[in-house]
Image 1 (cartoon, rainbow, N blue to C red):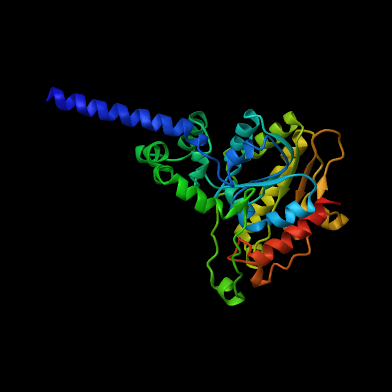
Image 2 (image 1 turned 90 degrees about the horizontal axis):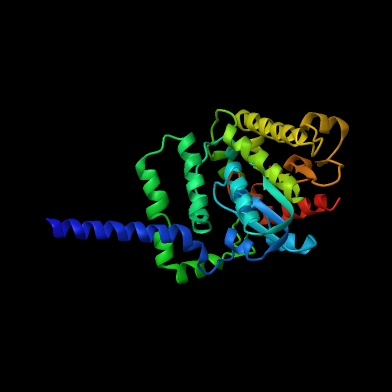
Length: 331
């Protein structure tokens, strides 16, 4: 029995040791063509886009690199939320990354969700301290269980690490400077009209609002220009009362947060339509904050060929939208 106990204790110690090494040092694996570590190793980025699959599917890296002056990187994780975007930004800045302009994904549904990491690539890109902070946030806002902790710290990314030379090469071939270079096609109107809506939410989550606030604070501290961007959704989304309620609440909250920091005088959508103004920004020295909503651009939200589903753009839509966005950014 004593021998068995020693063996079990040794196995447990080895598991704990390997788990600690993985959570702290997996970020040092050879970098892929997307993710935080790839950005950090560039040391300086003129245009950093940070967001969810809205940016991954909605922005063309080819167009951005052609139209914008300086280097460009798209940092996107599936389901990336404001609370974690703030943590990611702080992590990269602490690692020494210099940023000229930060473009933040404005997708209201992520601001209405309880904080949770959906894309475990985030865990591959960060150290143990980041993971513990992320867990504390998720644990405080969700009914978490031990199994959640176990999956986050023990089992997450094990297969990717064991097959890293092959997995990293296959996945990296799909990206360049964080931008998705796959070419998904669009849909038909009949298909998009048959899809179910995404449902209602219970309003914006305070933790996500604090994420937006922290992003603005960090930008101000480091002299980073900020632009919140909403990528186009299929026309049915803009007719959905649940989505539009969150849309208005989210844009208004960002406007008020920016004003509270003295960074900007962003106008609401109704006032902007009355005055005929487009993108909104401040005129003060230092940090500048803009907000560019899809409604402000000459994009056809009813063109089914431009969409993969109700919220993600096809290759055709991605290229068209990014060209319109760059034209606005250059004004």
